[in-house]
Image (cartoon, rainbow, N blue to C red):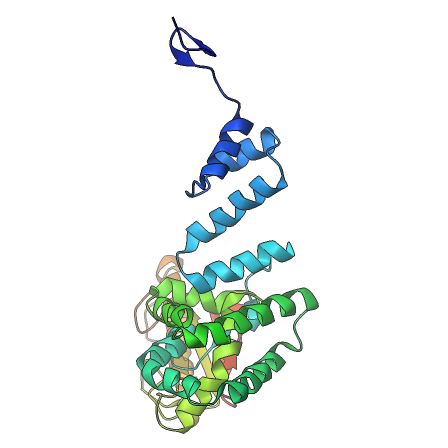
Length: 315
């Protein structure tokens, strides 16, 4: 005889709601898939279960505690990072293909000095120093400011400090090890996303390390910057970054290159070029990659924010 409640020796089917409730009681934890989220919506599993699935989806996509924390704060505040690319507000450092890469590479190299610096003050002094960082977000919109403040207070909080800053160590290592394109993507994000919040949080201690000679300056005005003549940023006031290759040219090299292109267009060298050949001159003189846009940079601060134009426009 079949056991009670079964048919032909099989257990009776359970509903998606019953299965979800059973999984929750057993503490089952696994990544939330789109199918799970769809079922939660379709079968009315309740706000608590749906929230658990959404939080799991955010956590499992990252694997980096600081990034996951930011996403969790966004979800908790019901705020979406829907800003377009930064455009004119994109971060740039003359001579560097990515400001994000320049900053985190140097910070990662100086991480020992960074943690010594953070551990130096007493806990009372430390709390005061950390509170001052919050002023970096005074001009942010209220909803993003509250998220950024909650994030940096967690990242640099006393609990993290007493544990040796595990989340900060992981975050710096992760950000410094990104691919070329991922670094550039961080520069291009909107003004109120995680990359800007992290930079605002870490710039103050980084400046102290640079002043003490413990960290290489990401904005060193004496380093080689022009990709063709190696001129330093301080030796020229107007610069152009070619996109998407990200090579920088000083104004003198840019003008020399543009004159050569113009002479070819006009047939000044006694050779009349057809349209196809002329078009092929719109390439980077360093890597010969096609130019999509140019970003203008002007020396006069630690970093530059560029204006972008199509490659065929005058700047």
